[in-house]
Length: 152
Image: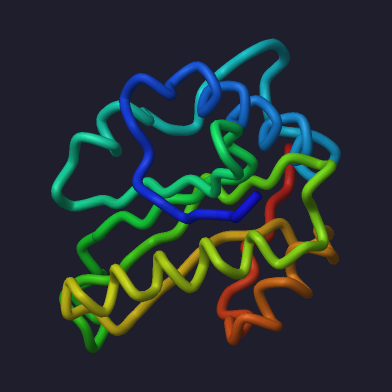
């Protein structure tokens, strides 16, 4: 079957919510500040409906195997661009990882950013998440700012 990158549909919300919980589970070991139980990082339906965002899925036939979103965000007043695109919701089902699916989603999202006339694309990744950092570096992303914290 052929892999297709396409816009997410509202009626696919159950699978998208499952992916979101997969992201939460993957990130828990990297972030001791995450609360217990189920919670949501994103308002996925709002993102799907928004003209300021693009939610994409990777599908093989009827099965959704990956996801990601791009959202237009206002830059800080001191930055040289007015807006940038923030990427998030990057997920590939474990059994489909290592096949370049994340790269295809990234390429489609950065193409969308270009269509919006936006040249700055950013994402956040946990510093300890070596596999994700490697994948994003391979796609051309460079480290920018490391957030540090302390619990007192």
